[in-house]
Image 1: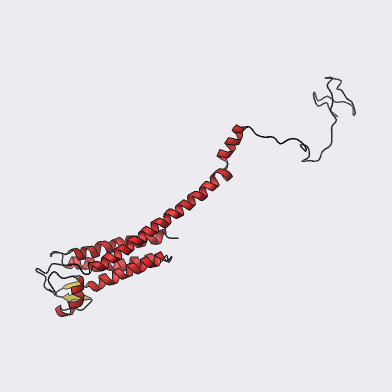
Image 2: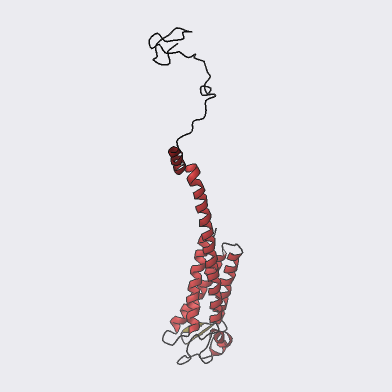
Length: 222
């Protein structure tokens, strides 16, 4: 056996070391894990505890990551709701534009009424070389209010689908809005030399707005 103080070899059962004259304590054989049995737990200094708390990935950052993810999902849901409501409002305005002036009747070869609306082209288009869907005569193709009504209803239907949880509702609203953009743009091109009314401009602008609302709502919805 050895002296616990100086490490000198001493005989078994010897009480004091011959070299350093210090007391020799009895050495016990212990199994692994029992060496510190009965010893009081070691408490690390407060500075060490604080450091570990601040730099522990398991304790410090995991809850924060979960909280950030929850906040992100909440913000995403609010954004989708805002885009959905925006698409719905756009659809309502597109339908409303049907009953507002689309083009000035001054100089317009196919006058169906004074300062005709999209609804006038829908109901009286057949009397001027066309039908309820469009007027096609003298090299002019002009879409009636049927298309603004259909586009607006499609946009609203897609928005309602989004509200009840169908992610593809954004696609439905977007496709309907593209139809509206196409019809309104053709009408503006065909009458670019005339004074176009507020109705046709609202038809075009809010159809474009619905395209973006529907597309981004689809991307952001989960």
